[in-house]
Image (cartoon, rainbow, N blue to C red):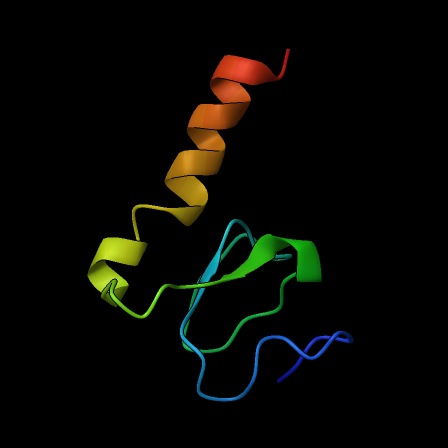
Amino acid sequence: MTCSFGFPQEGDKVLLIRTLSGGYAEYTVAEEAMVGKLPDRLSFSQGAGLGEPCYTAYRALCIK
């Protein structure tokens, strides 16, 4: 799977802010803007605290 601008590449570790279906699994569908590369130094467990939890906090604090 790649996005129109070539990211991510197959095998890249990625994090998602949200998915189109609201669910997460081994395979899912997401908008390009909602996908980011997980830094190599972070594990999947560490990365789990970045996407959705950070977006939820941002919405609670910044979007009215």
